[in-house]
Length: 195
Image (cartoon, rainbow, N blue to C red):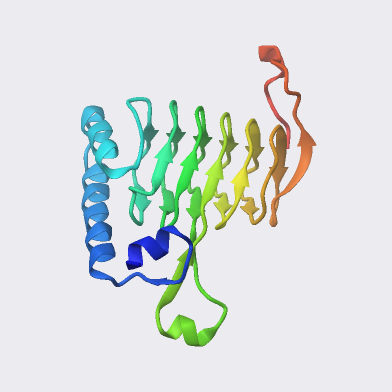
């Protein structure tokens, strides 16, 4: 099994493999080009090369950062504010109508607790899944292996270490559910959420 195959299966792997290094550097060039351009048409085209999946409705305010890009899959009508960081050594799936504030970080990368394995440069990844209609506030960190359900609000500054169910507001470090959201559609005047 190649190091890339091990990485994508969540097994211990070594990132300094030639194939992974090539993919990593390709990503860095695309990210650099994205962050340098102000033309929307160029940004859309770059994202289609960079990511595993995106469309014309994907918008990321520069600067952005990815480890590989190709392991990130984004649904329609995605928006992120500045400084989105996605360490996508494992698959990152983001649903439709997801919004992210500035300085959101999504980490799939992890390192062994065993110091001898760390010294040998082993690491691993765990998938992150984000559902539809999710709003993630600024300065949120989403850790490896987390799943966030549909219709969720994650409050600013939260550190998400465990799964978050659908239809909730969750905040804090560690992030925890503080409010359940109604599933039915509300009127426009009811949309503001006080956290």
